[in-house]
Amino acid sequence: MKIFIDTAKLEEIEEAYSLGILDGVTTNPSLIKKIVDELKEKGEKVDMESYITDILKAAKGTPVSLEVIGTSYEDMVKEGKKLFERFNPVADNVVIKIPVNPSTEDGSENVFDGIKAVKELSDAGIPVNCTLIFTPEQALMAAKAGAKFVSPFAGRVDDFIRANNKIEFEKTDYFPVEGIEKDGKVLDDNGVVSGIDLVSQCVEVLGNYGFETEVIAASIRNPRQAREAALAGAGIATLPFDVIKGLLAHSKTAEGMKKFVGDVIEEYNVLFK
Ligand code: E4P
Image 1 (cartoon, rainbow, N blue to C red):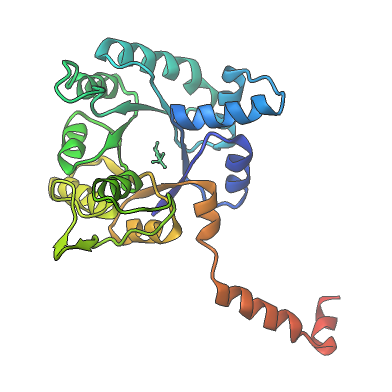
Image 2 (cartoon, protein in one colour; image 1 turned 90 degrees about the vertical axis):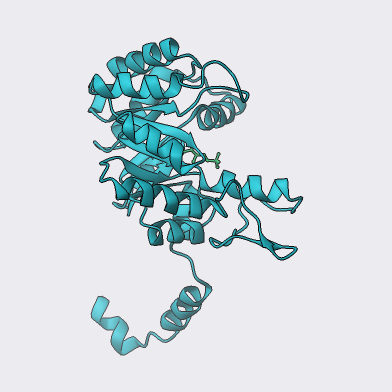
């Protein structure tokens, strides 16, 4: 499974790339806001153009998703082309993120605008990451429109199922892949029992028809969910920096290290001098 980092924080991107295990970056307007707010708090001024340029260079030729802000087909296509033309020459690695459906309420008129924008940008040779995927059929539509990537939001599905059923939770809490049973019934969102179940259904549906579209397991909140994305066959998981760190953690690894370090005898130590 490829690992992308889900952040707009340059320091995190640089550190993760220095490990040699990173395959891409995903950003969104909320992640950009988070870092810009942080920098402003520190009294730093942010020049967005050069900040994004630095991210693209730090990503060393691997894909970086940049999201549009419009909610109409026309705006998203215009913005996608503008972002691509402005930034792709930096390192030839820009992917445009388009919401699968930009309606902000059910029944809005722009329900097809995301898919139309995915199609137009993809036909123009611009790689698209179709985002805010919450059903396998949305993934299917995006793949049919030519998206290079689809991003099912695993963690937000788990949040949604828990919130709908008045289950208290912390954002990073583990949610079982097979779902949660309450009053003798497995809770679900329209046949999806967990975020990883959504990822798995997207992988299965696209796999059934041989689409080249890659599934990015997104909105991943903890290392176990990243493991389960890999078990579900996601080609990619996009992970926050702390989740990447968590992939290496186990208390027995730390305990074992403590013992090994404590057991180093002088006769062995001398070999390293
Ligand atoms: C990635 O492409 C998504 O924007 C991101 O994973 C969303 O994560 P969140 O649900 O933790 O905000």
